[in-house]
Length: 405
Length: 162
Image 1: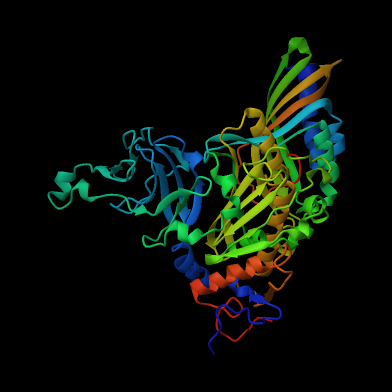
Image 2: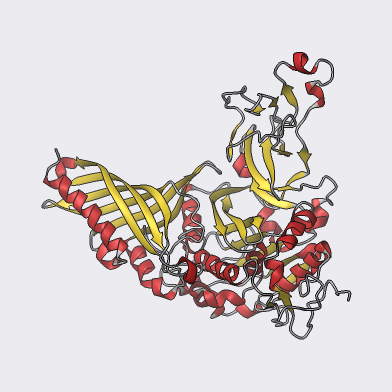
């Protein structure tokens, strides 16, 4: 039997098979066919404000370093020494302007054998090169593996592990069209970073970010949004390559005791507005009035994901404005905020019920409400792209003829 | 050798920890002056900035506490182990400051898989309390608390003051 890869199996009531969230073989395939092939939002450019600033990270298990070069251009490299494959830069962030015990300032130095690279990825020193390699290897032939890298869409550094990846502009399409003014009018600046390890599948977090029916879980959202005018007028728009957006409404923040109006905003953003962009395979931009939250994910295993949360404001913020944005952000989105804790509890519970080895189950993605806020088109659109890339039906991922019940 | 005001400050810090452990948040606030301010901060080596993760004045704390029953949580029981390291009297004994180290454990009830995890105690947070006090007639009240966290990976996070 040949599965219709884009089919949800039951068009009357679409579902996915829970094993897309738990099977190790599917997870490994996702790393190869999705995470190593697409553009991924990584750090914000304000995390590398000065020449020689760097950030290290892991993309689909590959160690990566992002460096603002001495020429002020941001680049991404595999953070792996071409000599013996060791990790080169080990701190999460810093400046190459600081000398390391094994190497000179302005260089990335592999502490193992002190091979040194400049901020453009060129090897500038191989200790005792002539004695060891004679004329067989010269440092001019050695450089770090450069990765496709662009700064775009609000100053985020987008990186791909695939040297043949399609242009970022083609991958994103017009998904940021309705958020462009907020993101591109002036420089943005990071004020918040934290991360969470959650025993759940990464797609379940993206599912949560891609549907609003779970607002029933959040008292804050019920009070300030669901019970307010305009909530059910919010609509999804889908874009090529699995992305979608959710339109704005005016949130009544003062309907929650202790919260208040959010007079600060972003250029072009309606006062107390709320816009979201969900990007395949695991990034979400979420502007709620005064603060932009960007979620990025690092899948660790089928049942473990690291989620990084960033809070972003305007670079020109006064001290008072920045404090206001931070307070607004923390009300619901900080590690002690009202909503984030609840959202993370939600996917933790799914992680328990869909852990590897559990029986296949049908997980409904079937709400249809004319693409309005409780429609589940965001998830269905995502899994159409997922099916296209991994070559499996989300409803029948192992080709068993809809085994999940 | 510390005197009576220092002992009173130390006692207040420990009583606050017991009340917070017992989730007697209103009783905890009764140990605080009306102009009390509270914040949770940490430093991120990733973005190389100090961050504020929660900040409230007294009305804000009261509201936050009143709203807790309306929110879903994991019902983990937080237990604070506090060591008061340094107390300094200031302004002729009318003010004081203290630095304490704390470890906060979380004993699981639900939030993951209750059948497997309920009863397990996990290390949740490590950090320091930086407290300021106002003393009247030898009785101290909290005027300000900064909870400065070393721990930055809180995973599911929490709805409770630390």
